[in-house]
Image (cartoon, rainbow over all chains, first blue to last red; front, side, top):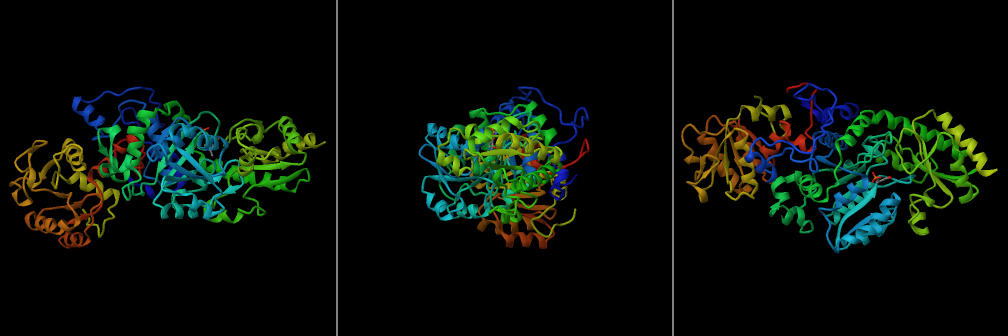
Length: 430
Length: 165
Ligand SMILES: Cc1ncc(COP(=O)(O)O)c(C=O)c1O
């Protein structure tokens, strides 16, 4: 036994959260395929339901396989704890749930995954919540958007569809000034490239569907709490600072201190919203996460090569990859994501919409799918797919103009990826 | 065990402390099951520690098999605590720590709960070779180190390839 904080990332991505199974000695984390858990006694059951003890009750709340993954991700992020859930989108709703209520809003970057623009811009209105979208390059605009009904700031570290690196520290300062938490979606960067908590983030959300699993097998999500936000400093967060009516009047922050947000996430969030990750999904993601650093290094290396090649190609109009020295966000790499700008970017093809569609249809190695963060290289025409529900203005703001395609560079041989693009560009522009 | 010079006990030191300790005196416990202090003593009692509740407002009542006493001086012979766990406001802490140090020569630690810090009392305790911990909760630390918080996905910082640690 040692203080785990002293271990390096490569060790933690394999060991954090996992221990040999105490009954069998099984070294790999078993898939605990069970719905419920036997109580030791009626007293034990009562204590668990009262949150006086921690333990397994029912798999909508917690499960031993899923808990290993939650601890693994929260350790890699340097948080106090984590909750896993059924998808990245579920994680976003679960992250906001303890903070929001009817009439309240989140101030969010407009550089987001298109599905998040729709979730925040439309669907959350059904709960009486709303989002104010802001240009995070204009900090005055961000600051001015915060009003007395704002309960959080939201951004993506490296924004999907790519090419943009958020100045997390600048947003954290604004959030701090207003006594609000900053939520960072760290999906595209992963904790290997970016540690949002070090830059002042309060909460982190993930689509574990992407790089953390790494091979396109399962959907999942996670929320990590830094454990450092004072939920009782003002009266804005009654679910955590005041008696919670959905939990027999318990005051979560007073009772659980820095663990309050996470306990709320399980005891109220998972219990009542039910967006639970299943143990099979956790198993696949645990297998993937063991090689996260190795994969991310190769993703970044390949992305740098492919982006540099594309930028020089006359058939290509522009490439928005922050890893290229020509990018206006290149200088942010050193502070925000020193190990690289990720492997997600867009490029504009001469010939516009038509050429993009033809390009996508002519590739042999790149797969045309609505996903990212797979070992396989992926391509998509965002404007006609993932960002289709957006207005032209929103598409432009998100970097998903009609003449651009988004690629998620895999870990294949980069020369093969370049040859594939070369052939398809010829077909698309001839 | 080694006496840590400040609040930064290593996980090994916490583990030693919580393993060696047999008896807690908990100053300022509530009898209201929704209060944090009640959560803590209930947990500690179920974990097998002897827990002496201290609160003049509830003196004479029984909590988890022990009589509540009015103050530290009323703790009966044979129930001297290894740890005095404090749930009182910082300005009341020095008097409690002074009393604890004079009453219990074998005291191992004074422990101030989350939100409670009193550097002068901590320094005093350390000058008498007693561990002082501030702004932490023994329930959380024990749950973290002995595998319980693992069940809820918390970052326990415990890494081990051994079956038993
Ligand atoms: C940055 C980002 N956040 C969130 C999501 C949503 O995740 P999920 O598809 O797992 O719900 C995605 C999915 O593409 C994403 O790219």
